[in-house]
Structure formats: C-alpha cells, structure tokens
Length: 207
Image 1 (cartoon, rainbow, N blue to C red):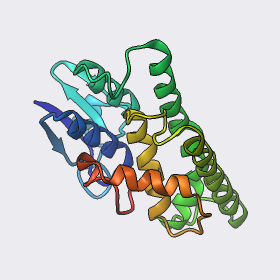
Image 2: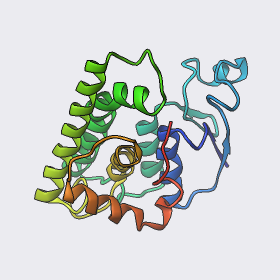
Image 3: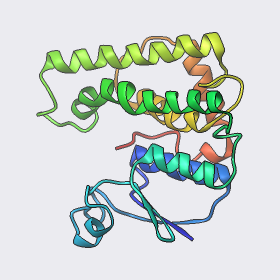
C-alpha cells in the first residue's frame, strides 16, 4: 500500500489525496507538518531532505512534489481520462498545473500569509493589498478561460488539472477577503464540489 506523508490541512497534500480517491487507490496517510509530527524530524528528513509535504512512498519510489505526484499516480494507473496520453492534450493539462503552481500560487502567498495565517511579517499593508489584487486577477484569468472553453480547466473533461486548480479556487473562496463576482469560477467550483471524491477536500481553509 502506498504511503502519503502530510497532514490533511495542507493544500498540497489534498491534491494527492483527492487524486487517490478519484482513481480509487488505497493508501496510508501519516500526519506530518505544523501541529503534528515536525518535518525537521530526522526520520522525515531521511525520506525528504527538503522537509516539505507531501511525500509519496510507493514501494522503492519516493516522490516529493505534489503536482508531480498527481501526474505519476494518474499515469501509473492508466487514467488517461485524468491525464491524456496524446501529447497536445497532455501538455494542456500540464500547462494548467504549472500555472497553478507558479503564477496562481505566487499571487496569493503574501495575502494568505497575512490575512489567514495572521503572520505580521508577511508583508506591508501595500504588499498585502498588491497580493490581493494579483490573486483576484489570477482568478479573473481563470474565469475568462472557463467562460470561453469550460466547463473544466482544460475543456469538456475533468482532469488532474482541475484537482490542483480547484484546490486553489477553494482557498480563494474560503479566505476572508473581498472577492469580485466571477460567475464562471463560481459555477466551476460548484461543479467540482459535486464530485464524490472531492467532498473531503473542498471546504474549510487550508494551510
């Protein structure tokens, strides 16, 4: 049975768990991270010297980056509905996942740290306001994309891109911020929430 190291509250751990549930995989999850077992523990660092969650242990294979783990699981278990085999279709899914991990995440990092985690060192009021503007702008880009080519991030079919993007959208909805009205994103989020495997992961503020 595969092992997943990381606490449920982590947005990146949730990506992996949701993927496992979509595929129907059995797994053993172990709590690691703030408030649970510290990732500074030598036993954890022996598995992942970076000291970050999630970590996937699948036999002799160890993987440590959430989006890579998601792609690995879908590919290993032959789920080309979640991660297409055709090069262009696959590239579009990976493109959306890369956008989530870079531009989308970078936009909300300061605002989320200040307003949700309550970190006074997250940034100045101006930096927090700028982060909020960028965060809403990224959601606006997603809204435009969904309005043009939805109902999912890469078109007509649900893919692993929707797992990672959907969890970032969940963070946007659950955070105590002022949000513009983005109808396509709202409809998208409700569509994701209706998926049986999504239930435990969409809702509640994540770390």
